[in-house]
Image 1 (cartoon, rainbow, N blue to C red):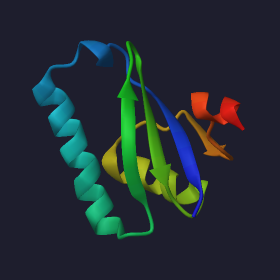
Image 2: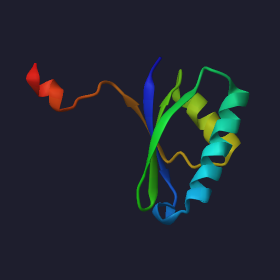
Image 3: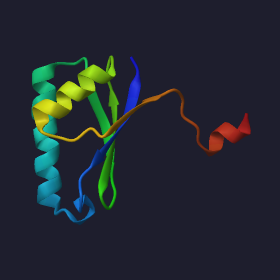
Image 4: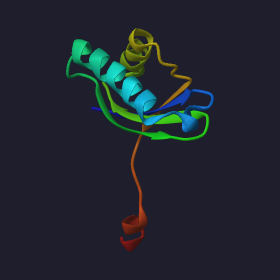
Length: 91
């Protein structure tokens, strides 16, 4: 199944408390449980004004459905075609 990076614009999110981030995570997980196993949250990176989330899903439509049900922005969705890291250079 494809992987996607979702860019979520959330002004000031980098200054969120641990409790705020926990609440956001719990809301996302609640929605995922209802939607079923076809969509999975891998992890997210919190920056100053954005959250970058990595998900496995069948398509962008499913990611948008999750965002709508959870009340999360999904400003940009990009399909991941491959990953590279320093070990890639060793090929």
